[in-house]
Image (cartoon, rainbow, N blue to C red; front, side):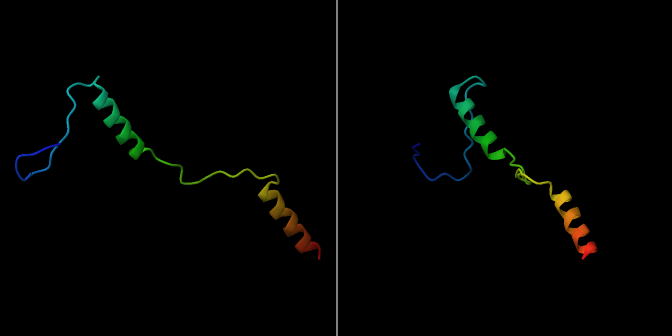
Length: 63
């Protein structure tokens, strides 16, 4: 981008149509920035944690 003088205001890039390649690329960039990531990540366990806690509680009561 070239300018003859100092730019005083913000420039807004607007594609010529909704089906243009520049519109598609701008939309893809915005969508990738707005994509939400899950806050809680799942991690598979082999043993049920609740069952394990119950077993430990039972052992504590027996001893």
